[in-house]
Amino acid sequence: MPTDFADLGRFTDVSLLILLSLADGQKHGYAMIEDIGRFSGTVLEPGTLYGALMRLEKKGWIEPLPAEDRRHPYRLTSTGAAALREQLTTLRRIVTTGVVRLALE
Amino acid sequence: MHIEDQPATQRRQPHASWVQRLAQRLLYLYPRAWRDRYSDEVASVLAEHRVTYWTALDIVLGALDAHLHGDLLPRRLTSMAHRIRSSEITIFCAFVLFCIAWLPLSLVRDPIPVWEAAAAVHPELLIALILLGLAALVALLAILVGGLPLLVSALTQSIAARRWRLLALFAVPLLAAAALVAVKLDDIQRSSVSQSGVLLMRQPIALQVSLIFLPLVAIGGSAVAIATAIGRSELSVDKFRFALLPAGVATVALALGLLGAIALTALLFAEAPQVSAWLPLQAGGLLLMLAAVVLAALALRHGIHAARGGQ
Image (cartoon, rainbow over all chains, first blue to last red; front, side, top):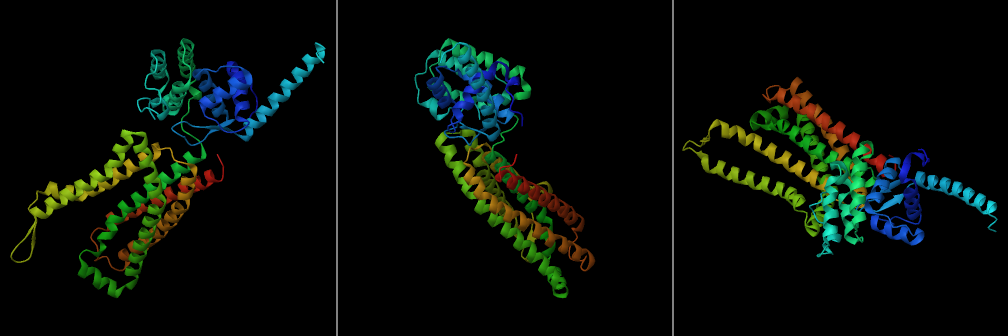
């Protein structure tokens, strides 16, 4: 299964935040919004969140679990974890380059 | 899953603001397939979320996005629980189909004197019939062992969540049973025994024919209602995993029952054609049984594959 973020378009950043949120365990929609708000300061709106969840589910990067109180928690699949690792490696390279070029350290 | 069935989280906010209510209403802008899959979840998020005008606009944009990207819309849930559930519902339906197909074969003992004479000469007829009956009984017990916990859980869940449409589906078998009892009582009342001991049938022919088909409609309708209700319930994967073993036993029993039915039909055809005047109907029933067994076997394979984590 592909681990490329390119076809996610305007949902690329949101998808990265969702995958990061699910990296430490399964969550349902509102728990993801809360968690993402805490670690990134981004307040996700439900329309955007579920637009990204639909895409991630389609790509097989996340999987819905049986509903609790009629809300499906989601979990990261192994392909999703691989995609996240790949994207974080790219971001780390970008950050390292930025740190060096701006002489931040 | 529909917006009109209020999720528990929504009930926690009895005085939702009008923007919140507007946001809930805007979910209707999404395509039906999206709403079936996500609307309950988004409604529960909206119940807890600080809803603003931007939230409402975000939902409108999300609905537009969903319409523009129809290829992304979920066609079915693909989690392990849902895949195992589909296979178990299919096995249940195959069992019901098998039972309906079994009815013509059960007529071989009618009239009893002819059957008893043939069975005395050909005891293998009796063995085949017993094998068929035992296999059907084992399949029934396995279906009950696997299905009853699912049924009770789904029913309890529906009552707790006040899902009236699901509860209506659970009521179908009860209504069907009540209808059958009422018709049977009416049948007994209309029939009477003459002085010579002959049973007199006073119903019109149409009513007599409908008496034969009513049980089929009742059984079929009840099975479809139960399968739909279980299909729309949200039960844990452990319950479905537990039911997979009895479903496997039921499938094996149906296959053995099919062997018994084939043997019985072949013996009747070759050795005792005088036993039943329903041979073409029995042959048709045999084909239906074969279809039921193939369906159950394929569904079991699919369920085992899903339980092992395959896609």
